[in-house]
Image 1 (spheres, rainbow, N blue to C red):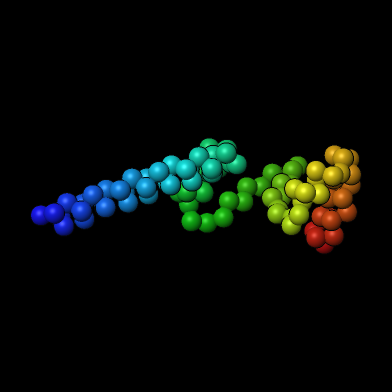
Image 2 (cartoon, rainbow, N blue to C red):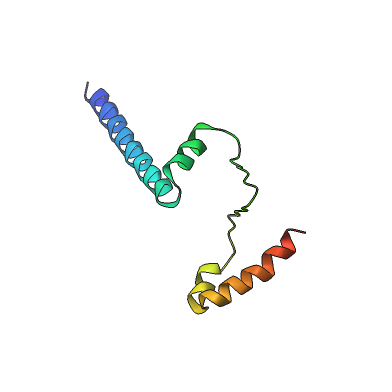
Length: 90
């Protein structure tokens, strides 16, 4: 009986930890994405790619960008990005 209690107690602790981590990951997702997009990501298994004739939005991760943007002015950052991305779109 004691071992059964330990097993159940351990299982409940693991379930609580998993629930806590799930809530944390949900909050992190909502910190970076609008709720509607986060819900689409969670419910669909395909890429989200909406099209608008007048707009292009690209999300990219540039290594070292955070540190670089701390040193550059907003104008310098925009000029740098304008030099980088037209070359990638060819």
